[in-house]
Length: 461
View 1 (spheres, rainbow, N blue to C red):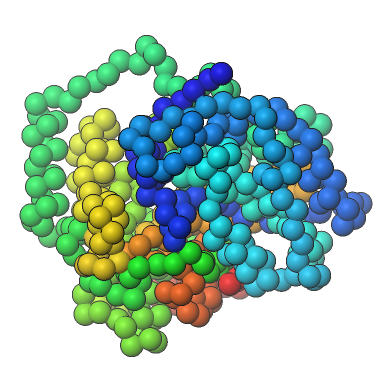
View 2: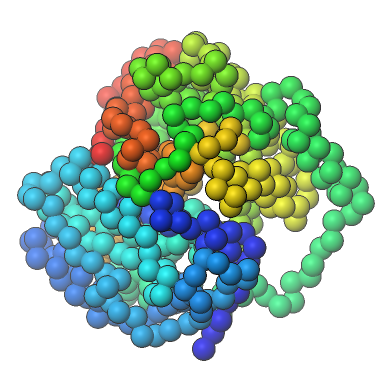
């Protein structure tokens, strides 16, 4: 049987697991039932998926020791998977709306994975209005990051509605032989110059030197940054991707910077409405993918950078400019380093945060950052699941002690999907943020483009 030892980064996500902080990431896909098919389509799909026991990496790997308390965890391969446990069939009271869907996803996302089994679950949810159904799929973060998870999704869907060769998710994955890195891959040691630059940039982070540089000491303590509990809230929003790109182009910034500006605007207004806005700007932790083009290995390969969200700035334009300067400073810092050292650099940037989590101080002391915001690019062509067109895909992520909310975006089929995941007790009325995202887009469009256009809105709580 094949085995796989988790890397240090993969292991850290396993070791962070706690009752109030399950470390799985997930995706919520919404599909339209194929023309000519009835409501029985979902049930038939569930039976088809449960009957398939052909597994690929990483669907049939489980922990050799079902515990987070281990230094170098090892995965083992199994072909005896309880499919009725891993493939669930749920239903909304018809006709189920986005809000009801969000509520059931929030409850399911609150439940941790069973470490004695392969670390994933798939939930089919029927009863959604307009002849649609949803698929909620979660997998432990020790197996994949956002980019790897996207590859799993795209690799299992088809660009043809009538694809006769399509298989369930676990049968359509990558080859098990690719689960370990190639043995002939040469280890490239950093040069003396690389090491000096690395030490210089780390000292800048720790000592806080440099204009627009955000450090782990920059974040103020807010209502977002206390201890969290095990129940979640989930809200969604969707925008036309060309519209967002047009605003970013008119503003002279990247799409990622505009997403951060929208996030900062929404958080500023939310905290103002609760009389909880600090004088200092909130800071954001941004995952940066280190996957190389053509890299098919399924694992975590990310670095983290820190930037300002400009929440201390009232003017929308000035806030966006401050965010762009801050993110550019952080990206320049990372890009000065060779690729082999960027992951280490990101880990050291996050070291104070990990230290507070492992010591039990996270949420009790000044945070290293206030929120995580990430943007995962996806395919821009329609995809199908056994003839059912995927209309939307929303990421569902991980709130943590010290950072009670996560905002992740996913672009698909010319739409930008926002998934807001938070601790239920920490952020009451969080669904207002989903509405506020659309209002913020209108404001930035009017500011930089000069007109507003009709937008797609989808909310769940």
